[in-house]
Length: 321
Image (cartoon, rainbow, N blue to C red):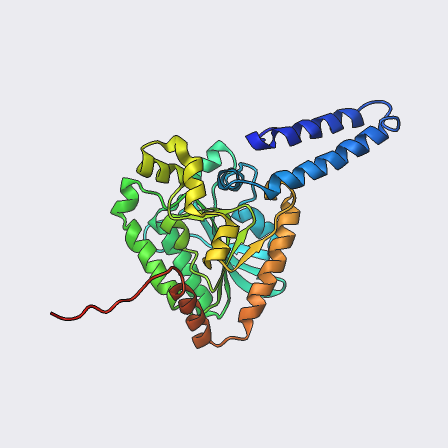
């Protein structure tokens, strides 16, 4: 199987063996052997994915066949109409968004888009937005607020683009502006980290009333490679950094950074897009339903209180001299 990860090789070998037996002219005669191999495969698959390291989860989050924002939009929403441009500089293909229907209810959907083949990856800058991408996202959020529609955001980016042009056009200001406006946005926001949630580039569309993560997604302030390069001067120690950073969905739920984990099909979302979308549909229905009856003031207070609770700190009074 192409794009198989290192830790998946024993599973892929079993799958290939089963496929070879099924392709023989006498599948009936091999029925017992096939059944035993399939049972063994199922047990081994459960053991493998129940004990993944943080680095292995990172590899799954970056899998080239993992569904991206546009894939989830097609599977989850009806009548999607994409909107373009930030009305300041241009249109950033690394961020997609527009109007859609979710189970008959109007929503605004926004997310990072990495691209699938080489040409599209380059066109979408590998999912790393420029300032105009964040300003486009903000424009769509304000449109949602104007027409009292909820916002659903899909986070899947290594981070905001750090190039000279992006900095010249105000990358940090665009991210900070998004955070400030999202903190007080009157529309409910549900955020889903679908793959890789990297740094401020992720948070700039991730300040939701409810923040969910796909089971094998990761969410961090820096990539494991970047962290390893800073701490040890060696990006090859990324697996060690990933373990230390607490970037997986279970870790982040325990820390209170996210509100829920969306289960993925056995082997990851890249193996079964429809199954992953079905789980995500249920989670979105529950999250949007919980926010539906809140007033504007309650929506804003709910979001602000959620982010105030993050982290741990101590206060100590210092006597005056």
